[in-house]
Image (cartoon, rainbow, N blue to C red; front, side, top):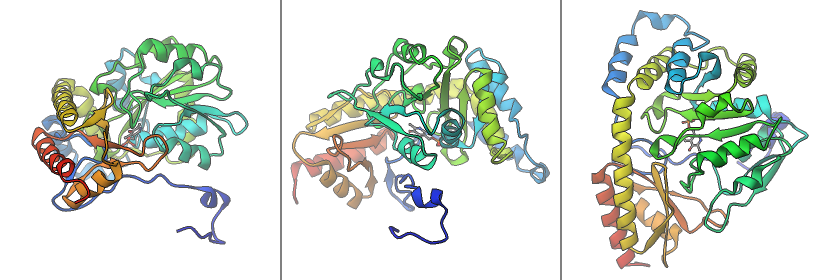
Length: 358
Ligand SMILES: *Cc1c(COP(=O)(O)O)cnc(C)c1O
């Protein structure tokens, strides 16, 4: 709706909400929102079954203490250096409110997660958009000495490109006094987390999610790692908004998922293998993809427009993501599914490529 209601506050008028990928029902092949094709760990499912009981009448632990200490152990940190939120989107929203200012612009890449401009607008944070290179790379030095802080995903979305850990560290080092937020939604698919660096850089906040690599998009669990000072900043915002952002089931599942790293590294390896195989097959079909380190590929065809391919796949019940934005409007972002789903996808693509404009 484009009109304006007299009942809306200035925030509601100003808002330009994020447009999530379609969530179609029924029998489709869903490769458009980067969910994990594999189920959560069996240990998560049995912990959840046990948690469904009379205790649901009680409020959950507002401090998420158990999840924080389990998450802290993954990176040799202490629970005071961990925050838990209702999906990393919520953690990101809290970070915008806790650390960014209405009179100092923050920097993020021109091609990046499209929720950042949405939050910047809602919270009235000015922005300096930094172009990525021709090959979509983030250049660390472009983010040094930002007036009001920095935010970027690593690997970046939707390009999948990974910035080396030393470069991430250099951005934190060269932004003394400003907060640098690294959104590691896809780090488990081929990168190395910056979380252990938060001891060295008290201005570094590392955000992760259990939605992608830990197969729990349906339960909404996000994490942040940072100095106790930054975590306290997030707690101040959260405690002014909703004491219980995490329900009992989400907390139960989060703890079990973070304890079963063995299961999750296995399924991440499967996703990585499928990604390599898919990229090879796409190249044979005339696509050129980025060197993605995420659970999706980002690829353009040599001569058939992405929009046309996107629409033809949709007609066949295969959902991928297409962004009608400058520089990337000839690319498709395709989530890595099971090998069977990838076979169906590449069969459909072979057909579309052989019969264009049909
Ligand atoms: C998926 C995604 C998120 C959001 O994850 P949730 O935890 O499900 O809210 C955040 N950042 C990036 C870059 C993502 O791709």
